[in-house]
Image (cartoon, rainbow, N blue to C red; front, side, top):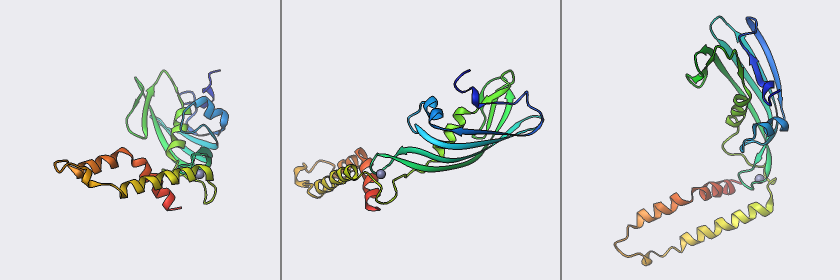
Length: 194
Ligand SMILES: [Zn+2]
């Protein structure tokens, strides 16, 4: 049995009507997926498959928690996730994606493996900003990051424009500096909002 055989949803061989498939996506699943964003979690997924004459509609419902690094202190944190979405599957000659929702698979295949779709839906449902609840961060780590930021701000305040030759484009060099390290701005904001 292949490592993702469990996630094959039969299409061609299934009777018309509605069918329900349920999955428990645990650490073992994330290990098999072997991707960096999410390596641990406990997510329940249910997939309602509706077979009509010319197409298959798959409605996905996912809910649970994943363990991912905190934006503020980089330690792992538990993030609740929830996702609702659907896919329309049609048969054709080759694999192709017609839109975000519509995919085409070869008729000879007759089934769809949803292991990766489930993973993508989980990643999609992780909020851009995810941090430990107030006070839950690794103090040592967030302290170090804060210190680094303070230094950076102090350096900017002391910036000595006299060092520049009058012909230098000062505005340009300021912009360049901002472009180099946008990460610190992001971190600084999350610490300030703490
Ligand atoms: Zn944290």
